[in-house]
Length: 247
Image 1 (cartoon, one colour):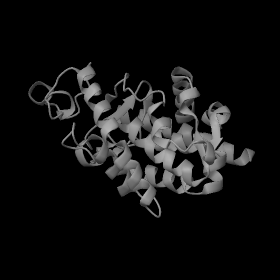
Image 2 (cartoon, rainbow, N blue to C red):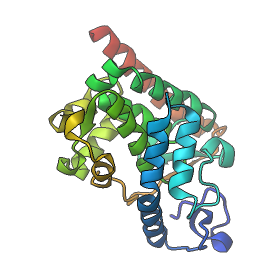
Image 3 (cartoon, rainbow, N blue to C red):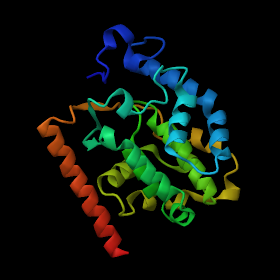
């Protein structure tokens, strides 16, 4: 089923792209080209910021994808607060809580000691926030890379395996704070001096092609959807609390 959060796929194409293309594969190619065009400017902006904020996350998305989506830089709370979004069995953050989730991720990521020791956990928090209807992977990768640079590390993404990385990320989303993604990424962590080409490293990252689209889980106020999401949240919070007790 086509991901159609706006309900106007027939007249405006997939996610209201500027070309009005209806084939998601065509839109993904447009996104990839736009990403390659905007990555240097987006990284330069992030590097120049004294600290990273939610507005920087929005600007990163806008810089990367404004050539494809007229809503680039708008989060789900702004343009799709009427739906809950998931991928596979994983619900992403409730639209009203996106900013809180990303702010928490940025707080942990800007703790240099935490980021250096647990880059996978920070990636999981960023991914769970899932601010946008598309382009999350690429946008979050840039934010994560800048946080890593400030913490004196980098990830050798070219050496990672897409399927194994995404499997570890899914485990991290299901059960945060347990070190699932950190364990996977550990062999690929490099000292900052070894990762001077940040843009090149990001371009080599797996899982950025958007091959598995989001789905609409339903209205956030629907009792069934609300119950499923709350059950997931309880599990996540239980895992985080248990992980803290183990440390």
